[in-house]
Image 1: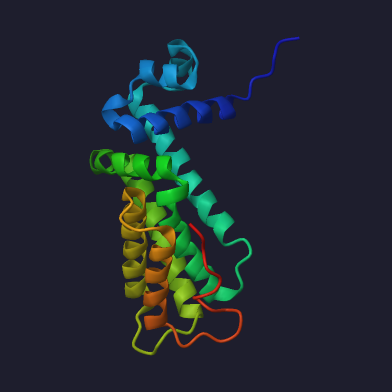
Image 2: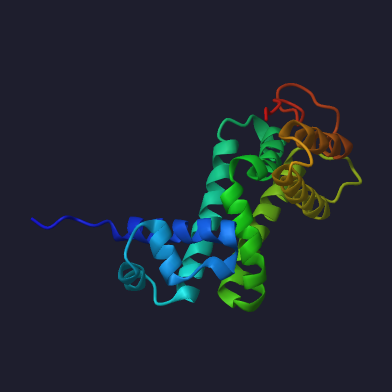
Length: 206
């Protein structure tokens, strides 16, 4: 009886190998041959699943987005209310600099590609818009100060979290230091914490 092959899983394995190359060598390091070597498969098998480098990079971008979304979902699984969920979402983005180095570096490598590739650009924008909407909704539900615009503040918080993730990645500051900065900004826009739904609890380690 012939062995059953999970084609979706095989495609993802190859796309993950491409992401590792992106993180390590940039997009220039992604060739069909290099990806085959990284994935431990034949060049012909990579070509069986992907029409060419552009097709492979687009599939890798989808895998990359899914991996980041998974990290965020895991971070908010036990959240207690909107303020705690908001904090955890922001810290999940910050934590990419320590716990998801390959996706973060690959994401930076793909940024230049997104400028020229409409499909990858649309994927980037859709992902960013979804996170922005979530942060804005959580902020609005957390009872912000009267002068806070949730939409505008969501852009600022997301930009802050992304910048802190890069700082953690480069070793400019630790995860705890980055979390303290996030908490500082949340205290600025949210009322004094009451009960368990506090943006300053719980603390992260790193």
